[in-house]
Image (cartoon, rainbow, N blue to C red; front, side, top):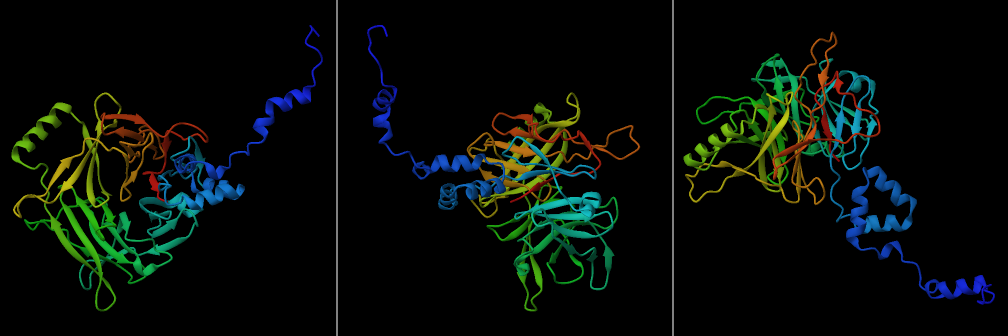
Length: 420
């Protein structure tokens, strides 16, 4: 044995590990809160969080203890199709097949989303419905609009936003919508108190010169308690639901003219900047809430060298309070989004607090509606979803590939966000 004598393996091992064996193993409960929150943030969906907490009682206790610290789950990307609808869980690397009822899969067009998994749908059959991705519940909405006291017309749903989910408290739910009377037509603002009345009630979105401008997007501002409607002249219309004496919802209306810049010199600088950057073709305008703020987002396509792909997103913040009452509210350019991520979509734009790879990004979906040429069947391109860094002014493709394959074309458009 080379002069070392015989060894007792068990005794030798005991000597090496005896001190370690006396130290109790570290409990999961001893982990710092920031690590626990990070772990739950990495799980792609709330169902995964539930499964993990069910599998281990310690994790369940930690999940419940730190629930207030875990940030809201980011929206999932819903990709409609009559053959293979898909969903991408935003914090995970994979795409999954989405199980939809046949009427929703075959006949529905997504027109807006709300927290709790709700979506507003316009059906090819002429119906308008609210659908829940979680429960698969379908609730009817009106298909006609009341223009005057006795004049009722058929209306086509184009966009819709909710003041609250229709369930479990229907009395809190008012749906504000953009409706078209004929195709193509300007979009009219109308609202409906859930479960009350058979028609949408139209509200004329006037301006100071008495003219009406078509609406391009709408969002419900939770802190202000009102719908904020954006028209194509970049002005805002505030509509606050209020219960009348008869128990029927009425809208308190306020128009806000918004300048594109604070002063004439800033307007000139902005015009020169836009011409210099050659942002391309305007393809979408969106409105979003961030805390008490209101954001206006413009999306531009590169019409020259990038195959009609999104090249630029400009984010602006509403500045309402000047030094005097005569000061005109204006749109102020936002140059970066530290600790925040913006999701843009028709009647579904949202802002979230985030300190990971999503921070400082505006996430956009492919709502261009570009038809694929040379095909007998109507098919739309679906290759323009991505993330735009506001600080560095760069766009990159998103979501990442993985899991179920997502086709580059689809017979359904546009996609939407599944809000949790």
